[in-house]
Image (cartoon, rainbow, N blue to C red; front, top):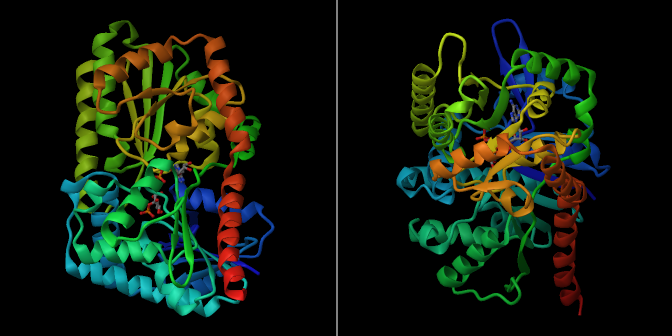
Length: 473
Ligand code: ADP
Ligand code: G6P
């Protein structure tokens, strides 16, 4: 028996330049979480996803990617992939599910490409499927896949997990009727439909009841061929990896460098993919407000802002980048001087050791998404603080706020509130830092990514078994 995990992004990306071929790890919460599970669990696992490289590059380089799981890339034709990924998945589903209805740019062609891509991937998964396997489908790119696979492999164990929010009925209903039905029927093809929070689970079940007229009993939808259970499974991180990294030699050296560079200053830190859902413009506005309201911090604080390039072909992402850069320029120009740059900005990826060095140098992590399914960065910051120093400011609009109860929560739209909480966090005494971090670390140690995956997969087996039993009777 093997696990077939299916996601748009493969864990690896291969980029060719004039003189070399570089294999890098994909960014984002999904890839990080599923990769941690895949690398450390002893299960037989095959990862299916869309290749961002061509067949020849794969054949020539696949032996360089040495992992304990198999990778099965799907090669989509360029135009189909663009319509599927940029036009429908990211300019319709991502925007709407994160409550940005005015950003939605729906086209029928985009929807047709989405359906086609789901069909191609369904066939690929069905081809490698063997009876007894568990098919674990991830995220908004593959909402139609559970249903398509149920038709191809009626007895399969199928789990679907959504890594982004599922919106409430009033937002979801904005989609054309055929799209709404395709999505809901699609997800109902699974044995388990998993979400980060109970709110999302309730939104999904309400939409199914109101739009498809299918009732549920204790979150179980009974259909002719099988049952689907909807439930909450908050994703998490490899706690030990982040906690133990504090003492890595390279991390220690890098941390020393950062601390020396800013020795007379406190550090505020944030890292995100550059995405309009992450609330970076709001965050900068609040930082500016903070500097104006608390001038005693002038020259005594620095905001290290790391943004990882993401979805650069999409217009809204380019626009957001320009807005952010204008804002940084304004703050540094108006508030800084020749000795002090208030916002230090990097639009480039950082590697793991640098990320940990930054997390563990920061006096405050400022995480302010306007909407986020979970937000793993918040959990990683907490886990990495083996020294029990630092304070976490976290948006109440992130799923993580439900798990990290000792974070300082903020409304990302309230600049005044964020400014005040920044002042509070920067002045927090060591005892309070310890108490808050200790409690959150205890929670994360228990609820790590292995616990998340195991619970989800066990539930999928359990619900599937209920149907196999009733067919045998
Ligand atoms: P999202 O999934 O929306 O990007 P999350 O906060 O849930 O947001 O997850 C982001 C993940 O990406 C984290 O696990 C973080 O460590 C990882 N990450 C951050 N910077 C980089 C980077 N430069 N390269 C690869 N992964 C990164
Ligand atoms: C979020 C999504 C993932 C996605 C990731 C990175 O975490 O839930 O499905 O892979 O962002 O985005 P990208 O578009 O680069 O895959």
